[in-house]
Amino acid sequence: MTVHQLSVFLENKSGALVSVLRLLKQENIQLIATTIADTIDYGIFRIICSQPEKAYDVLREAGVAVSLCDVFAIELDDRPGKAADAIELFAGEGINVAYMYSFLLNGKGVLIFRTDNTEKAAEIIASNDLNVIREKDLSRLL
Image (cartoon, rainbow, N blue to C red; front, side, top):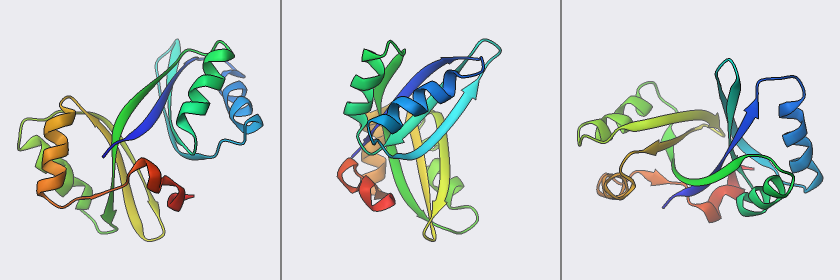
């Protein structure tokens, strides 16, 4: 019910991001969604991509600090308030959303997020018939 996300730790300096992007490009790995959260010294580059395990191995072999974790990806109708409605389901059950990012694609919203309780979040998703995007279905986003 989850998808793999890479978290790449980058120094906050010129060229750090492009070196990671170049490695992924050389391996023909397609980016689906990305976000960067930064501090003064470093950034966390979060990536949903076509081949997360391969991307993880490529980056590790190149000496890049990277981790692989599971996040939820759900598809929402493209209407104001749909993200709020979805996240409210988790908050109402005491589940914290650690971070999230979203984008619109082909008339649908895609919400990617990580919680502090994956098992309970999965139960909420199932009991509320939220439209989950599974790892095997990511290719339809490309």
